Image (cartoon, rainbow, N blue to C red; front, side, top):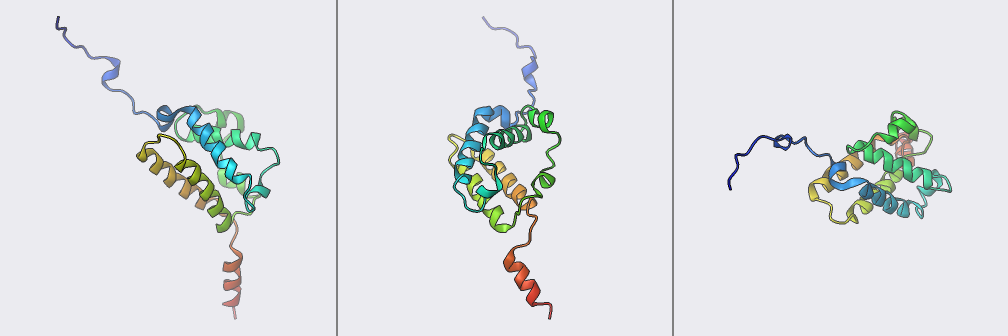
Amino acid sequence: METESSPTADANPEPQTVYDLVGREFFDGLVDRFYAGVSTDEILRPMYPRDLTNAKRHLADFLVQYWGGPDDYNRQRGHPRLRMRHMAFPIDTAARDAWLHHMLAALDASPDLHPSIAEAMQEYFVMAAAHLINRQDHAAESAAGSNDG
């Protein structure tokens, strides 16, 4: 029997967010893989507390919120203010590169991630890591100092 189709709420579905597509578990896994690298990194490890539990939760909550999930991060910690929150840590290009290395490795190890999502995340991580640089490199300082005379 053939029925006449009628418009439904699904006729114009809202765009799905990255969070809708990958879920909370994806972000928890990404953060776990990222911190596995950070935990042994000689540049980054000193910037983190001994117990990484809260740092992991904060990063996962931030990423979930950024990529379209619940706003737990804002409700618990307020506006991200990433640059301000990281100002106390000496982030130069070496620290940026180390952070990016571990985050991109964690992303690359993510199972079944659609290439367009991986690319969008990679672009975001590159931009965010560069934005957080707050110290001039020692080599750049030396070169600038030698050009003064």
